[in-house]
Image (cartoon, rainbow, N blue to C red; front, side):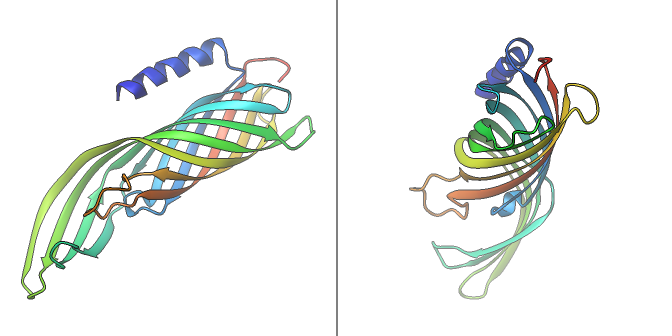
Length: 216
């Protein structure tokens, strides 16, 4: 978490001193993992134009999933059947760097397409009701809490963003964007766990951007 705090401080300093645009956004994200099926959150970041049509962006995203889910699988160790009803309060913090290029030459609208790389930190807090059925038909059940973190997980993806300039006020742009990506979650060599090695994401964002330069 020290990495996250240090990065947030660096981003805030960069926003005040160097950046050309500040962005605030709301996010809805779906994923291939049942722990993060329906996520709501938001983010803050800045964008720095390298040329009039190309830019770098740095973002901090935060997602949370509190929607109950059901999970069932067979244990590889003793072939018992495990059924779980889970109330999650799972969180993700992601630090992302992207490069994108504007395909339009319009003075009022922009269509950016680019690549993105990120570093994710997951905080898992779940209340679980578990039922175990053995091969002999014996049934046992119980409740427990699962609390742990999964840190420094690398993700790669792309972004597609459409933005309209000066819609509300001068220097303020609105945007919608789509961010498909894949994140490493479990180390590939680990066995005996039901967690996926990779998680696929599809993030939908609505954002407001403020330009710090008059000519942008």
